[in-house]
Image 1: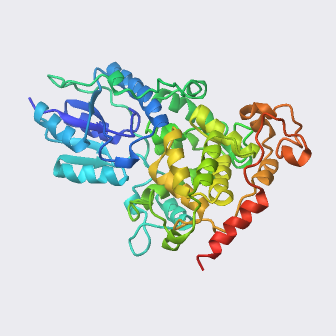
Image 2: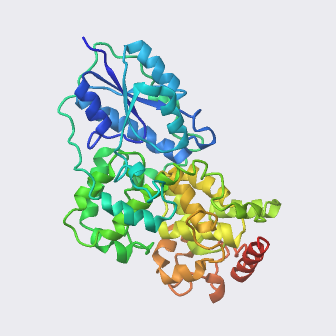
Length: 454
């Protein structure tokens, strides 16, 4: 009898369009394995919100495998070490997995050597093929997007294998409850269930529903008070659905380009890690290493107010409270809240990036870093630091009154005119805090800090 093959699962918890799974099943008996590795990522071990999602996603995927006569083996520890131990236990000589671009996963893959067979499947194209004329990865999104279109459409999604051959003997598996992925004291995830159902089944439902709404995306995506975005980001991040599957489900629908461009940004930020693996920690533009960020006791107090949604700026506070309550934030509001922290409060972008990493269910290393560095002006493809978003104006421009009422209930009785800036209308209730910094004061302080770099 031939030896079994290991299927190493990470952010690819699906049966549909799963090339590593298809390849493993083609060779014979398959042992699907998920390893909770907090050692290899180091400081970038997944945050609390992602752990909540992972718990439920692993259960859902395990049920899907069971329906195919298979099972999911859980192990905890250094991924490469655990996989080699499983090879010794089972007699497996080959490991199939989908390619990932985080530096710790690339290091783990290198440690496994020729035993590991990697497959592309979590992006619209193989990112090593989308390069400049010199054969190097792009550092500018607009150029990347033009080049990527030459590789589209992606290959047709792979069907689910009819069967998954089981090994003669299954190795031991951890009990997921022993991993303590869910918060308990306190259980801050109570609101997550309202908006989210992790797993491949729900990912496919969301994508199907989104195909009927995508034509309005460009018009609605910046309106926080409307449900105008796909909400596919956590499903894509955890690999419960592939970009190729989403692409195929949108085929034939009108005005898909703006949304496909957002999928392309996800690919671009992953590809950046090929040349900037430390992008989550290091400024893309070294001159910003000298920027005089605030880091005193007052700055720490301001950071805490931002984290808790108590800045006195309703659109900022609504976004931060949505993040804490639901593990997600509207994309326009992500930009507003990030700009406020970096520019108005002059607090290092990495403090915000780390908070998002812990609180977002869709926190992606490359995407999170690139988005924060774009707002901060420190990235290789970024907004200018001197471009400072006006949160009060943004709130009114994008009609965020309903959004604010949902997430800042102490302002719910204010008129549409007053709710964006209660102080300006003499309408701020006692229960709502005063602004921790004036708009002009914060803007001038940021610009003064930027001038010190010249």
